[in-house]
Length: 197
Image 1 (cartoon, one colour):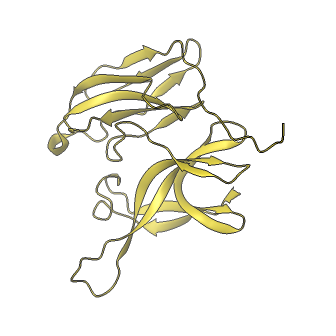
Image 2 (cartoon, rainbow, N blue to C red; image 1 turned 180 degrees about the vertical axis):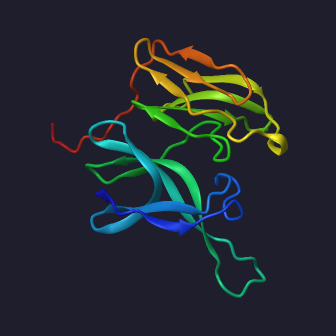
Image 3 (cartoon, one colour; image 1 turned 90 degrees about the horizontal axis):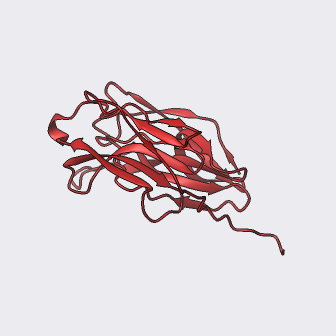
């Protein structure tokens, strides 16, 4: 299993309104190769969660042709995060609560992802810390009201992690930074063991 060489693909807000950044015209994509075959396409940097698994963002090639178009029109979009087991080749889609590609930029530390997220109604901005394979976020705190039509870009600076004490800081655009200590957390990642022991 390996991540192949990156290639640049045409990319725009028109082709991916939820994920493209202002003036972005190319998306670097690279194949995730398992047993010599392309299993998925990815974008961005991979994060080693453990010595045998890593998280990486999926890149999706989507047919953008209208029913009246006579030819296919393929566009690239940023997709969900994936957890990849190097030993077994198993690829699992990660569910990051309140993750919105237009707003959220995950910053990884250990098996935690910290990002600003938008609730299901799209009216509230939250500070979120999700843990791989945990059913609920470790942290989901309201940062303020959110108006998709009149939102700053980006909504937040990238989250900043601190190891001891375990702390994460969020800086919403135009607002004061807020920090949260994470206490009483434990690893919930369970990796399949192929050994006979």
